[in-house]
Structure formats: C-alpha cells, structure tokens
Image (cartoon, rainbow, N blue to C red; front, top):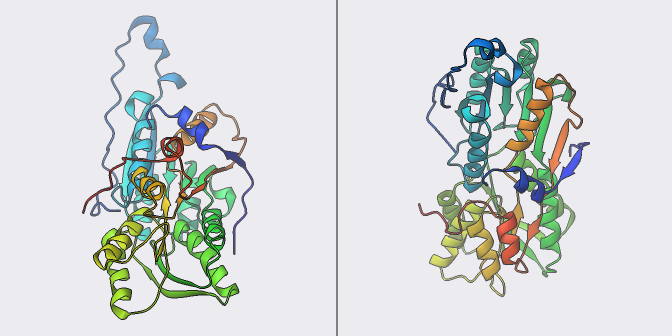
Length: 356
C-alpha cells in the first residue's frame, strides 16, 4: 500500500539556493563525536553575561544514516549533512552509519541515553522503529526523519523531509511504458530490501508487471546498491541465454555494473541499442551517460535535505511549531533529451564515474 503525505512540494532549485556548497563503517561506536568541538567562548565582562543564551547554545544532533560509500547519492547526502551540522554553525554532530536496521536502532538508543538534543534518522528499513521513537519522545528528544520514510505514526516524529519513492518508481515506469515495446523482458536489480527506496521503485514496476501480460520479469534480485553485484546478476542472465531488453536498476551504481556486463558480452544498450538501461539518483556521470545515449533514463532522488532539517531545528529552538510536518522534495526523471543545464542543475557528484 502506498503512503500518502500532506505537505509542500519544494523545488530542487530552492535547495540549490539554500546550500552553501553544493554503504558501511564496521560497527563504529556511535558515541564517538565526529564533529570538531565548538570554539571556546572567550568573552568576558558584560559579554560573559550572555553565556547560555540561545544564540550561543551548541545544539547536539545524533545522526543515524546509511553507509557513506553506499552510492554517489549517499556521499552527497552525508556531505550536505556534515556541512550544515558543523561546529561553525553551532552544532555538535554525532554520527553512526550502517545499512543494518538493528545496528541503527542500537545506535539511536545510545544517542538517546547520551541526551542529544535532536535525533536525525535515515532508516535502513521502514519497520521496527516505534519503540525507539517512543523512547526518544519520552526523553524529550525530537526526531527528524530525512531521506526515507518509516512505518510509524506521525505523532512520533517532529518532521519528515523525504523523497516520494513511490512517485519515483511511478515516474520511471510511466516513462518505460511510453517506449511502446511489443514485449518487456526486464532484469530487475533491486536495492537493499526493505528500504523505502527499494519498496517505492520496486512497487511501481511490480504493479505494472502484474497488470500487463506483455511485461515480464526475467530475474528480480537485490544487488544492495552495489555495482559489482549488479554486474554478476546480469552476467548470470547472459550466461543463461534468456532474452531481455530492459534493465531496471534501482540506483546508478547498479546500472553501471549492469552495463559493464553488457559491454563485456558486446550487447548494445541505450538509445537505438538492444537493451534499455534505467537507473536512479542522477549522479552527474550517470546523466552524462543518458545524454550520450548510452543509458535511456535516470530518475532523480534529491540528497540535499540538510538545509530543511536546519530550518526545522531553528523553528523548534525558537519554541514555534513546524508549519509543514512532512516535506516531500520535488524530483524528476530524465531521458536523452536532457541538456547541459539540466545536468548542472540536477546532477550530484562528479561527471567522472567511480572505478572499483
């Protein structure tokens, strides 16, 4: 079932104007302070009387996120958070990264015990968070969701700044349907199972396959956002001799791995090729592949939630209510009609694809 959100739709252009610039560590101790200590207050005399005022308060945030090396999207997401929640901006940031939900939950519980001022959460899985969110609420710690939704009542978090993963999938599938193929034989490469991104992007495709006799899944496997695993999946299908004409990969890195397998087998792809290539996230290097006709489609997923989170925290610190509890970021899909201006405005990261 799809979850409907009420909220405002904010443009990517707005995010760009807000920004100043712009998965997995092995069980790091979440208590480690990864931010630089805020500079000591060297005021004296009358100025010292202002110590403890709201303008001088250092706000502690506990950030639970996915592995920064998960993808180009996640790298951009982490960088945005680091820039926003720095000592220079009045924050002390404590971070924990993992693609495992249980590890994230344990880290969140530790941050709650430490008494952070705010808990920022991009959950690895949509389920299992109710108890932790209730503990945070009992401790007076507002929880702000970013990037991904979770299956929890809205009363348990202060705000949610997220992508509409269901819509991302729907937009991609609508584009694919517009290609009017006689038959769709699809290699479906999924992200980490249970994540909001995987559910949204998989759900739309599965609904179409279930509804249309001409749409077929050749194989449906998770590559956990990983290019090498995606390459292995596609190579296994090639070795089996099964026919396919679409690769629907749920992020750019997996699409890149899939294309590597096709190139090794001398199978054409992209515009006028034998296989349609679809990815998600809009890394600049991926959009260049779309522009060059090597890929056919790339769906946008906006990683820049930090400025919005910062505004929510400032609102709460001022003792005011958050006007819009759920903010859904506006996102697009791009095909070979993409322009240089589109890439500059919507692309993330570098124009050069990563190498393994």
